[in-house]
Image 1 (tube, rainbow, N blue to C red):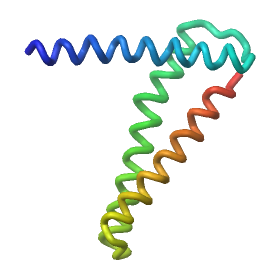
Image 2: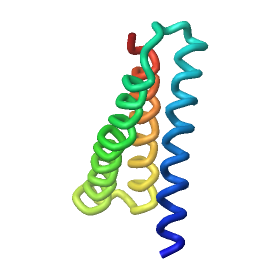
Image 3: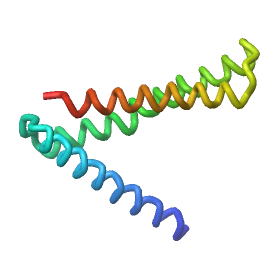
Image 4: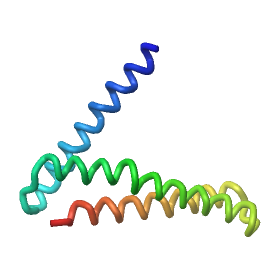
Length: 99
């Protein structure tokens, strides 16, 4: 039970740090000043919607490559991870450039 509570508290503080880092990166890029609520919603959408979608597509690609195409499992995992990382970095860069 204690471990569960610690995980919730750590997750909350990690999210707060994500929002603060996001705001500082946007400030360094000279983006228009937005409210904390808008940045919080943008980070929450990225964390809970975009990253889940990217992970599901990457896992599907891994399974497709391994079982349907016949690519070795190690290569299919590497290709799926590479696609997921590249897509995630691209989406985060787009999020930083939004006005």
